Length: 367
Ligand code: CP3
Image (cartoon, rainbow, N blue to C red; front, side, top):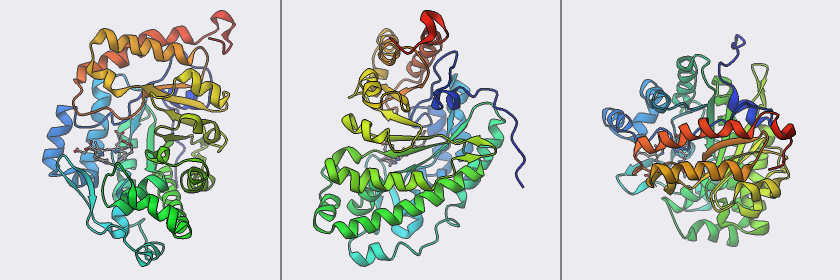
């Protein structure tokens, strides 16, 4: 039996995702636990490699908390990866230093795809749910915990290509030449992703983010069919309330651009925005139907503290007044970033954002 959790000490993220008034803009950072932090590199070394770190409940919890000890962040994000599902499906995930993820057994045939549906992954992914529960306990109600998964399309690109890709020749070939088989793969992944995220919610994840990193390579009807449609299927199956509270869902398609408009109609609570679309334009495209998260260019963090502060001021000004903004980068923080620079960005959000909230100027949404 679950005992109703006490209220969160800091629920700014959940309030902003619900587009409720907040005294300042909440901030968290994609890949806030990662290689730019020396304490992360030390724990990864202790674990041996990245996947061993993900599978070690105690160490996964430790690296999740590391950025919260350094910075005044308003959320924790589960330390894991979007490729845990294909790994549990038997594709054999491994990482080669400097080369990103690879699969020993990528999908190469219709039979490979058909074999996936009956595989039970819940037991194999127990380490993820255990990490969620342990992190929630360690957070002790300080800030909310975000759980996540990849979108079916994005996860499928890695499963079919067998590795990170720039051209996506195989997966785009599958979508073009055998669309029914591609549909089948997306349906299987949508189903598994829904169960996986619901188990994260039951274990304690208080908000969910779907990473559709590669949806932007699809155009028009193909985007609807292979990227957005399967995400809608996941959204439709998620437990949107747990522990007597809403569980908000954030969708993030890198390079979404004009697609933000249809994404806002899916029933999600918020959209991630990258730096190729301004927050003002994103707000226009979505008509204030959803909250917006983003969108500072991660490369800004390699610039001077003055330029970082200017980028924070510009993002706040671009979103404008009123609720519904969650401050973040437009993609993950890169390994070359000086940790102090990230501190400059987060402190600047705390310092500058209160001016965009409260009831000055009538408290309306005009900039
Ligand atoms: O944001 C967080 O702090 C939570 C943890 C998280 C990781 N990966 C940890 C990780 C999240 C949310 C992800 C998502 C993820 N993983 C995505 C979608 C978001 C995005 O960045 O576009 C994708 C495409 C992946 C697949 C993946 N995992 C790649 C391409 C790589 C290699 C990237 C690199 O920088 O070398 C990974 C490994 C990975 N996942 C690392 C981390 C911290 C680096 C591993 C290491 O070397 O320690």
